[in-house]
Image (cartoon, rainbow, N blue to C red; front, side):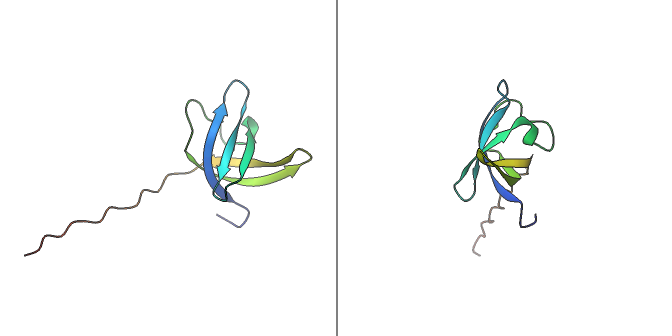
Length: 84
């Protein structure tokens, strides 16, 4: 990821209306349109899924663009060691 790429998670996406919102890791809430996804927009429940995106700005304010879903990194669990 480069400096212009940000991360966050989906809050919701309405398939009928073709838009939704993303919560950035910095606590900002950004609008994302259906055409703001690099691939197809989400179908079905997507709340909480991690995303990477760029931030654009227009007269209406800041929004997410070039949005894509990223794999959730699950930390490895430590192994229990048995004492001898």
